[in-house]
Length: 470
Ligand SMILES: Cc1cc2nc3c(=O)[nH]c(=O)nc-3n(C[C@H](O)[C@H](O)[C@H](O)COP(=O)(O)OP(=O)(O)OC[C@H]3O[C@@H](n4cnc5c(N)ncnc54)[C@H](O)[C@@H]3O)c2cc1C
Image (cartoon, rainbow, N blue to C red; front, side, top):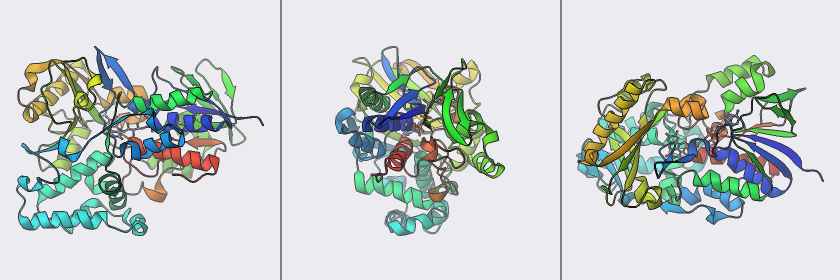
């Protein structure tokens, strides 16, 4: 029987994952096209002056037990990625200058006993909402629910910041249902969050390695210009030099908006669908500071969440608009070389720090320098004296991420905000172009960050193979 000729456009987590899953069945002859010279999209990792740098700033919510690990399980190679598990004890919450372990030392924030009780009640009630009721909770905001429990604005900041880390949206846009689902999986069922040894790029590289072993063909630095459509059916792709290649199936990892608007073309869709696509919004964008130190300054900590004030939403809105603060103090800080010592030369240290930034907040070298100083001042507060040990520092802006991978440099893709979760997620099967599928975080149903993208690959695999999604 002849195999199904398939083009996968984009080698992000979802693109490389689905390419490997299909190639391994033996039923598909798969070409994987990647516009950049490296695989992985937002999960890519590059070398810089002997240090291994992820493009983003990552912690994987469920590590091997999450959707990325499940892809490896299905591929029959669960050990192809090794993970460094991260426990709560190794992580620090830096709340307005007070370092504390969460949740065991939460009382150090200075909540009253009553507020602490309400906070715990909120947490336990929300995490125990029965599974069957969660879809109804997808229409309700986390902030509304919090307000029914909490009085102290600092408690709202704490949970608001957690939701902004999960979904990279504002807390008043965070749906209770999806928040509860993700929190329960991560903090109750799996307890397996971590970081991949070899950097985030180790995951898509593992998928691609398996893909190639099963006969898949990888085309790096090979952007697809157009998806060819004939009689409402995807029938091939076109490359920038005009070369056309016929395919039975086209899978786009480029994202819903770029696929519909640029690769397929709006003329192939009815106005009602275009309005829906235009109406979806992406998650917020982050910038990431990458800091190389001349010696290991940070000893036991591997992960810090820094919250510098109670005015979370106001600060986020200012940052989104392009404001560069004097000191960045809402940031997530994985100490990469404490997670994986092979990330830097021996005797050195590598950490990254990421936080919300406007797409156009770093257009000049002076602005880039301002961002670096803002991060340095913030980091100095968390790790006093760190500034003396900086060998070099790089800043990856949302504009850089947009130039490389598109989608306005957003962190995740089409966000999981109210009105964009559950049945309202974008579809896997394109509703108007037959034989075209969307496979990226945009069309993932559930999960945090890269796991939402991996979820999309798992569901598409289930759809195409007729098997149940794990
Ligand atoms: C700063 C930052 C921090 C993050 N932190 C976390 C975290 O802590 N935990 C977590 O799990 N996730 C995190 N994420 C989110 C996560 O990285 C993304 O959700 C996930 O990687 C998206 O994967 P994807 O498969 O949807 O697509 P992408 O990674 O966007 O990849 C799409 C690929 O398609 C390629 N492409 C696009 N158009 C074409 C074309 N025409 N032809 C060929 N190729 C094309 C692109 O070059 C790209 O490689 C973070 C992201 C960023 C940017």
